[in-house]
Length: 388
Image 1 (spheres, rainbow, N blue to C red):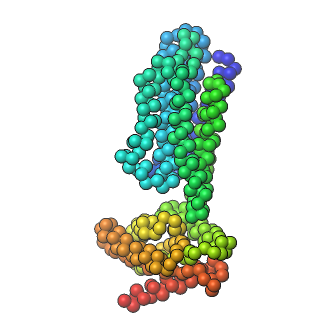
Image 2: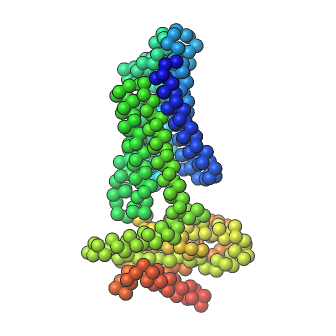
């Protein structure tokens, strides 16, 4: 075995170990959300790419005619190409879901979009061993075929598509709170791309795919950990500190723009008689009520509004509107959807929520003044409910 072969295999094994550590830590968090499972599959496929690439390299180290090693080399390289397409497809679906593209959850839309990638995989299975993408000579040395560059080009296209969309969304003012996640999605393919170009254009003797994937996976995993700090784990909405940073950002932005036709509103939502739910039905049902309320808020408010858990059974909503009637319509939607959620849950109890809001005006100078004004309106509404 030559020194170049040893270095090649060491680089691949190092990438596998790092990716394995990321996979282990991800699984230890016991996060059962669909996106987390999808990310774990992505990491496992990236590790599998490193493993089959290692096998392919080992099969070619003898530089002597050997029918068994020749067959092993063909099989390993076919798996290598297939797994590259799987990783591209997994990342595309993962990223589009993170970007809240609803169509990606519908097979009738997703399958046509992934069709070029599927056809490419069928090409590997049917004709990959016939020299179109690669071939292995009598001495077990790997060579690229005439259509080799088509394969990485298609895979990279599926990786780049979410990047362009993520950059466009990150530039939009209303996506400020999600900007870190959007930039991370955009960076994944941009990190992988230089490694792909170097390996495709310079030499197949450089195992650059593995370091590229490893670095990109680390960036995504690090961002996932950062998001865990900003998200309320029970309800899935932002936590209080994130809400306060977002409100401060919006207040500063309005001061700078000065001419905006939109008014800034803060809405406070509180579950009525929440303590009674906990005392009567237990804390598990109390948690279920909180999760149900968060789900209702997500359905009821405009997409560009911010939702956070302020504390306990209280939620905060931050958004801009041209007319107060728009905010009142949001309040009505929340009440109607809470009633519908009660009916659909078929629980032995029902509950209501109170919603109070405040608009930023000359009397509101600080962030705390803004919150207090919305809270005062909220408890005025709660008092009125008690008197009904």
